[in-house]
Image 1 (cartoon, rainbow, N blue to C red):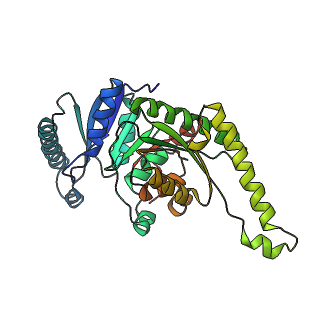
Image 2: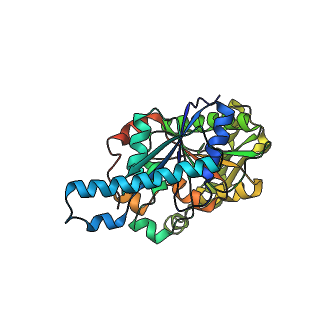
Image 3: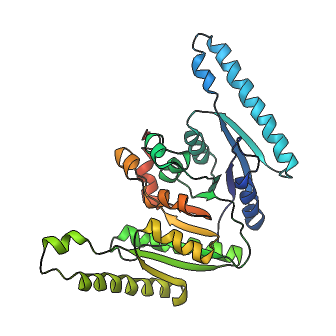
Length: 314
C-alpha cells in the first residue's frame, strides 16, 4: 500500500496547463495526501543589479515572488485546486529549493512535469529533472501528458541479471512499488529486463570465443532470474519481458507496445564528471517515453548522496 501523506507539485510558470498539479491531485484523491504547490522563480535581470543596495535588491526579489504567488493562487482557484498550500521561492537553481523543501517538510513524493531535453545542452547545463533524479531523497514522479485510466499497464524496469545485493534490493523495491501503484490504479504490473548484446571485439580478439554460446548463456541466465523474481511477487509469465538491448531502448519500446501509463525505474545518485558525460538509464529513458516515470532510489543510495546534494555538474 502506498504511504503518501504529503505531495509536492512543482509548478512551471511557463506552461498554460499544469500536468504535475493534475497528477498530484489525482494521487491525493486516491491516497488522502495533502498537496503543496511550489514554484521556484528567478529573474535574470537580478544579476545586473549589483549596483543597487541590499535593501533594494531584496525589495526586487520580494516583488517578483509576490507577483508569482498571486498568479499561482489565481491559477489554482481557476482550476478548482482550492485546498492547496502555496510556496514560492527565489533561486536560480530550482532543484536546490525543491530538495531543501522536501527534506524539511516531510514530503513523500515530488511531482514535476517534464519535457524532452536537448542532448548537447544537457551535457553543458544539467536539466532540473536530472538533478532531482540524482539528488532528491524522495521518489520523483515525472509527468507527461499521458492519462492514467483504470486497467492501465505499469512497468517495473528491473535488472535481474545482476548478482549485486544492492541491485537485488532495488529490484524488490521497484516491484513492490509497481504493485502498489497497480492496486491504486486498478492496473497490472509488467516486469521489463534487458540484457547486453554479445561484445563483437571479444570474438575478434579471442578466436576460440563462441558468440552464439555466450549469447544463449546470457539470455538464459536473465530468463531464469526473471522467472524466479516474477514468481516471488506472483506476476504471470506473460507479463514478463526479457529482451536483448540497451535498457534506454528496450524500456521505451515495451512501454509503447503496452501503451503503459507509468514506468517505475531505479536511479543512481551520480554526480561530477561521470554524471555530466554518462548520466544514467533513467535520465535517458524519460526522453524516449510518452508516459510518466517514477524514479526511485534505495535508502542507502540516498544517504550516500545527501552529502553531495548540491555539487553542481555544470
